[in-house]
Length: 380
Length: 249
Image: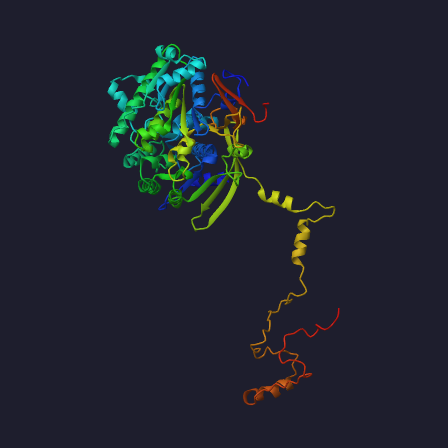
C-alpha cells in the first residue's frame, strides 16, 4: 500500500491542479520507523524517476534532520548507483549549517582552508545557511529543482525532512505558506514531508494534513494501555521499535477517501512493508475448529444466493404490485377473483350510500378493544 | 558484575554505534554516574573529550574520576580533555547576545574537535554536557537557542568520529505543557539511558534501575540486536555494578 502512495506521487499533477502531497506523521514511540518510511518513499520515488517512469525528473530533498549522506547512503543500498544519484537527486542541506554559524566562524578565523568546506564538495548537495528566511528557502528549492536535465517542462518532486524542525525556525503560517506555494508551483510534480506529531500542539499536524492529499501515520504496532515508558513493558517497547503500523488515508480527486494500512518493519538496515492479509487472520480465528465442514465452496455460495425464499414475492415476469390496503386498484387491473356482478353492485353505491360496521361482542366480560392475549388462560 | 571496563551490561546495551546518547535522570536516582563512566570510557580508549560543565566545578569531577582510576588533571594537561567551566556561562540580557555566546561556545568546541582530528592520535572525540537543563537556564529559558546549539554539536558527529553525551533531568519536564526540550532530545537521540528509582521501593544494595533504549539508525549493522534493556545498578566508589533484576543474592 505504500506503493499506492508512491504511485500517486509518481504520477504527479494534472494541469491546473495542485501537486499531490503526502504527509508522513510519526511520534516518539516509533520515530526511527517514521524516518525509515520517509527514506523508503524518497528512494522509491527516485528509482521511479531514474527509470523515467515518473512525471518528475528528479527529487529535491530538503534535509533538516539527517545529513545528506544518510539519504545518499540509503538510496545506494536500494541499488541506485552514483550515476543515477547525480542525475536524479539534489539535496538542499539545511542540516550542516542551518544558521550560518560555521560560515561565521570560518570568516572570523580567515581560514580559506578547503578541508573546512563541509559537504560542499559534492555536486548534488547545496548547503543552505539561513533557514529562518523562508522566501530564500523557497527560491533555493525551486532553483535546485530547475537544474535537472531534460527537455520540455521539467517537473520535480520535493521531500522535506522534517517540517517539525522547520517550525522551530519559522512560524506555522509561513511554513504552511511555503508548502502550499510549492504545491502550486508549476514545475513541482509532487511533494512529501515528515512531521513529528507529538512535538507540536494537535492543531499543527492538522494544519499540514489539510494541505496534503495523502496522510500516512506511522503508529506503534502495540499500544500499551498503561504507560509505554514504564519499565514493566519492555517487550512492548521492544516490539514497537522494530515494527509499526503504516496507516494511509488518501483523498481521490472526486473527494472519496480511501483508508488502508500495512505493517512496517526493519529488516537488517532496510525498511520493509508487509501488506498483511489481516482479514484472513480474523476469519481463521473466528471460525471454531470442529469436525464438520462449516465453510462453503464457491459453487455452494452461488447456489445459496439463487434460492428463492418462500416469503419472497415471485413475480414470474409480471410486475409486482403489493396491495397496501389503502389505495384502490386501478381500473382494468381489478382483482380477477372479484365477481363482476358484485363489483357492479358496490360501485354505484360507493358514491351515495354510507358504509356501516356492525359489531357484536361475544360476551359481556370481553372488554371493548382489549389488548390482552385471548389465549393466556391456556395451560400449555 | 565486574566493574566498568568491559563486558558489563551497560557497555553491551549501548553498543558502539550510538552517536547521540541522552541520559535522563531524576532527583531520586541521579544519572551523573553514567556520565562519569562514559567520560572515563571516552578517555580510556585513546580518545579525547570536551566536557561542558554547568553543574559542578572541575575539582568535583577530578575527585570522582580519580577514585575510578582516571586522572582528569593529567588528561587536561595533555590536552585530551578540554574542560569548559560554564557555571557562569554568560547568557546576556538580549536575545542576540545569548545566540552569540552559544556561537562562541560552539566555535571553541569545533576548534578543539578539529585539532584532535588533525592530531596524530585521531581517536573518538566525545562531547559531554552536564547538564542541558542548566544550559536552558543559561539561555534564559530560550529552548530554541539550546536546540540550535545542540544541533550544531550533532552535526559534528556526522562529520567526524565524534559522539555526544547529554544529561537531562527528566523530572523538571514532568508537566505536560513545558516539555518541549525533553521531547526534542528524545527525538534526536540515538540512545536513551534512563535512570529511575526502583519501582518496588528502596533496597539496601540496589540503587535504582537503568533502562537503555537503542533507537538505532539504519546505517548500523546490528539491527537484529536487542533494542530495549532494563537492569539494576549499584553505584560504588570506583564505578558501578549493573545486573539483571533478581540475579544477585
